[in-house]
Length: 365
Image 1 (tube, rainbow, N blue to C red):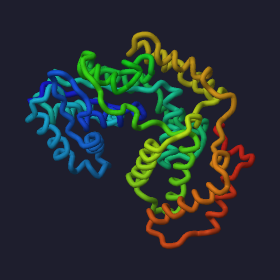
Image 2: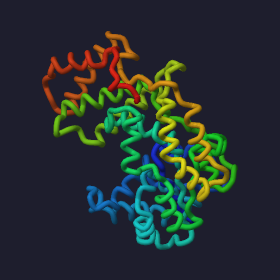
Image 3: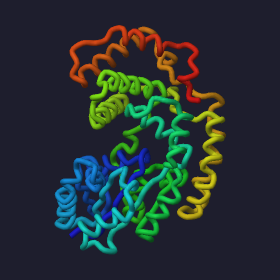
């Protein structure tokens, strides 16, 4: 039987994909120790199966037992279960699932989650949601939306996790200077092993974030897919797969080194600081040595731009490139949605909207 289980709980945009790829490919060496990873890519099916409204709920027992059986019959030292959305579960719900499906591992389970500081999380959420076609506005609009829904007030959520699991629960700040070797994969492996006696062989930065220009191009593809689909838009899984494949293709193709990544502007950074100052201080006091969250928040304005970045596609590509790009977007959208014809006037109208010109509604403010 496996000696220990580690649940890697996420969070979103904290290098989960890189950790999972290294584990799935066994692209590492740990002298004298064996690590078991029971998924081909990740364990997203486990948390999804715990929600009654999810289609996987009916298969919950089958899904969890499949992984549990593999872990029970293995002689590995450590089994890792990893899903980037697992820390959004109710911790009592998580405890119930572990007690039900892993009853033999009492006292031999650890939980770890990585967490981006507030300002960085808003930037990364903006990039991710635009890439996946779930949001088409600027960062200021997203900040307001997140604030209204209180999604980034971390302290209540993770205090509940700590209360549920006590010393078995760990939070690591997704702040480069607080990560082992400045890298989340190496940091996770040190946590997992409890030592520095390991070697990573694979690339730990496969899921590198897109530049603004790349992000807007992918976002435009997603917009066209949703527009042509009408009420019967392509499924979320299809749109996520398209975004993932595009990002993988861009990662292996040569890129200019001066492409700018999404960044806050100073006025927005100041508003984010005002919104989350107390939560950052509370997180530091409850979970970390030093002040990684308060420090990151305090430095957000210093790293910010003076003005919002343009979110108009035509400010990054010339007319010929836009023409070809919109044609490909329309073709892909029609193909995904099972359509045989295109609405030429709508494509032409879209070209006019994304060409360079003053358009305050397209700014990051």
